[in-house]
Amino acid sequence: MSQPSSQANRIITLSLEPNDPQRLASLCGQQDEHLKLIESRLDVTLRNRGNIFQLAGAANRIKAAANVLEHLYRETAASELEPDTVHLFLQESGLEALDENDESENGDVVMRTPRTMIKPRGLNQQRYVSSIREHDINFGIGPAGTGKTYLAVAAAVEALNQQEVRRILLVRPAVEAGEKLGFLPGDLAQKIDPYLRPLYDALYEMIGFEQVAKLIERQVIEIAPLAYMRGRTLNNAYIILDESQNTTPEQMKMFLTRIGFGSTAVITGDVTQVDLPRGQRSGLIQVLEVLKGTPGIGVTHFAAKDVVRHPLVQRIIEAYDAFESQQEAEEREQREKRQQEREARLQAREDNAR
Image 1: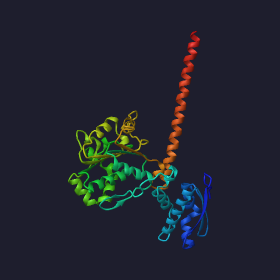
Image 2: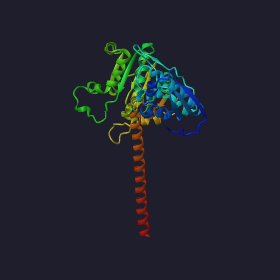
Image 3: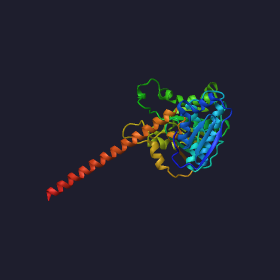
């Protein structure tokens, strides 16, 4: 297996009991794929002979690795370990804190909804939920699969359940990738309803289908296109603007100025997935510049490492990020080359004129 990228500070030995070959094989995975994943995430070296494991690396990292191995080995008593299980456990453990000098964070952040208790997975999700609780306006920025919308809905349901707000509004702009809403049947609300399905699904999980239907009927929960926000002032409400990268600057300003007393707003989006017409600037991109450093506003940035879906999703996002960065560099190089060619032609004309 691989060597840690930094010089090992310590070596410890760990014995996993009971010594069960079948459970140990499940722990290690096919061709040690589970151990390799732990090595990669924690920057440690793992070797084993039977149930005796040798861990090498920085002191805090091998301690974390030992905890991971012990936890996963307990899991093997009930079921066969899958790579997804290992990946998700590493995410939930907030192990990225090891890369930030073991910065202390509250690992007991939980949200209670009528049907389930939701615990953020990983350090960044914990920070996000803490920020939502501490600020009236919050931005959650990052790729799909990082839980930014799901956690925002959970925070809204918890606030409603604790009577901190009187209603919940879930809002989306009426722009979707590759879709022309004008060709779909129905009014604007009916046209955009299928795109609000992720929000409905989250509510059903947290509250239950029948209760969600009752709350929508009583307008305690409202799910609507962004266009329906114009002209309203929303007091004592929990407002979530999803897919906000598809707002125009005017729409974003309109949304933010609707927020009234006793209200909390969470704005989620992915600045790399803008579906606006070519040449139209995203309101999300602009507002992050306009409000940078403004007191009372929380901003949490998620990255590919925060993805809690299938491990391949994380790799796909990283691959696209690398590809787009390369494209931007090539386009910048081409622009500079064209600029140099223009300057050379102008200089040649001036020389000929002399």
